[in-house]
Image (tube, rainbow over all chains, first blue to last red):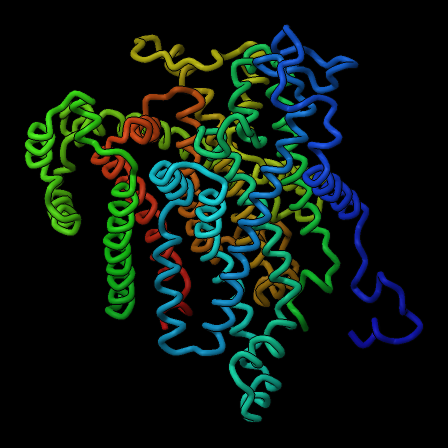
Length: 284
Length: 317
């Protein structure tokens, strides 16, 4: 890092903060969907639940830019309304999963001993159930509602986040400055908050992005099986499901929500791959 | 094989068995929470309270949950999965044929995707950074980051709608014509192969590249070994462990994949059976299917771990 810190080379590129054009593009797509999730229902040209066209599986037209669905509802409005469910539920679930995973992971690394063993064993058992199967059984058992979906997705993805955060925190935990802080007599909460967390934050945030993609995929999968967001509401997975009938003649109603999912998940993946090295790499 | 490694492997299998027990408890508890009284559903609204109580007793539903769990576990150990609530048939009998169908699908997919993924994973690692590598890696990222049903939808659009080569959503059933059978299996196998290969290529490539970073490989390069000799002779033997590990882990993605793919293509496999059982609240059937899925998953994960232990002496301590 000495070269990067010399005054002559003080530009973002050399500081490790450079973002590639692909990363910028990906960030724009993500920002677009984030804004749509917030304002989508207000700027939709038609009410998402209203049948506006007598023709079903209508083609792209000036009045219905993305065509109409199997009941003749405007697809553009439905995709915009769906953004709120897909992005909102996934975001809530990833927040819960990663907060739990990171806090537990750091606690396990700092405390060590049987606390570490106990937390690790329990979360290992949870992660040895295939996630789709777990989601399927639990959602079918308690019935599907938005809080249940968020809870199930959070539980399924906590172990992975825990394992990642713990592995990073264990490395930081052996650093001299942590030993010094411990010798000073700092409390565990202080060690976690002031010594460990700032040093694992970057990679942990990148991992959170990946987990967000997994959660979007699983939510869409559940909705596709009819166990996700229930009618009359629809997220993008449900939109694909309800319009499957149009697949055999390539109706835009099946393709458009699919494109929406793909643009969001691929963009998040690309953004993480192109993150500035200072954020992505483990702190040096 | 020295006794130390043997103990380690036996320990790993022991952990898998304990995990399976915990999983069975979770599966049992989750299905217990299914809303609706099975007896009421079976007998209908007009049932007298006496009839309800009688059937409840006959089905052992009057016992506390922990007793039923013990009974179910005991039956499980003897291969008795209980009887379906919906049609009183033995669960083992219901699952049997369906399981064979799913295994056929999985075997075909593995047979297709493993050689292709191995080849692409190793070649992309050899020509890392080339146009070929970047093209394959981009496709892999795209396939990994979209849901399975999207890959299936695309496959139907391309092969059935635009090219018209394959039937869209039908499964032929019993046909003697080998060509018809192949056509019927093609769509689900193509979809699953795409999803599983993408995972495998990514992990194989990472495993080979990791080995290529080792100092002894650099030494071989400095000696003047060609790039392909360096990979095939020097790096690959040491990467086999991680690669087999990656294969087993990727094949476990099959389990999640079949649930979606069997539903889309209406394929009469065990995942479809389970999704249907969920909608009819058929507890013993759901429990049986779930246990088979977890057993398959744990088997693959354990194989991956054992291979990792065998391949990497450093993990033995």
